Image (cartoon, rainbow, N blue to C red; front, top):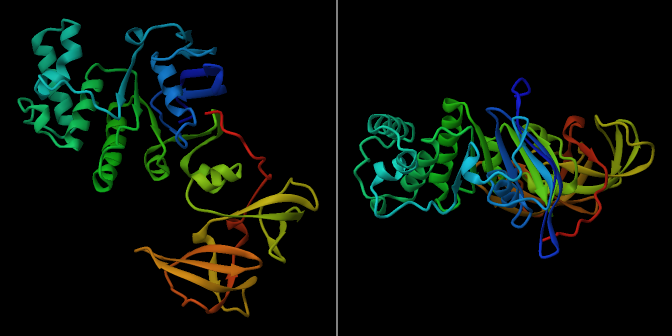
Length: 354
């Protein structure tokens, strides 16, 4: 997405409520036609960030720049931005067609143009023929589609989505993730999405912004965030990880669990304390006589596509995902190729701001 121009720039944004800091010096670029996800636990500041971009909140300090213009004090209705909230807030006294057309009627558009746009949106959200239906007769997933159509019909430059799939069941949520991504690509507009669901972020995003305690911890592509987390919080929050303290002996050699492991990382210095991250799927179970370390299988869970085993080895309990099950109590070897070992600076403990 680097060839796209910058659309939104959050410049040193901070926000306080009653003396409590909920956002601290946020700096973020959002590119045109980009699907950006703000990801983090409840209370990390992601919704506050979204509301500041939408104009529903004003920062305590910092600026919101939109296509080169300062819009920090601009009210929501003057911004080329629409928002879809988790609570869809559809009008129960209006049918589907009139819910979608509501904003266009306020703009006093010609009826033919309103009908054309509404029909286009119904087609986009796969709800042709539902125009005369009552919104109360729709399922949760259908209501969500109408809420999105109502926001998109105004042809915004940016669509803000605040956990819009949170009320849906798992199967429907996964279907809607793919539909939302498809809509964004078809329309070619910028989506800014808020969620605490890591899989949702990995599935849909061009760029993920990981937040915690009112700060941005890492920005990158889904693959970059997953493969190269910058600290223990990101590694734990994005997927599952084994994180253990180790010592960087020298470039491309790290020691942990009483053994030396070749790796591909460098630049940490000699005999430096580090955090070692290894994903459960990157650990290979081998014979105890050939493993880099040996251990005992303590528990086994069948997870559908793989077995999840907890294996005690080298004074650490490893979480291992494998399609081959090893029985509880068996002695096994564990092996990791250098590319699958990720080294990080040890992370200091952060105290949440909210």
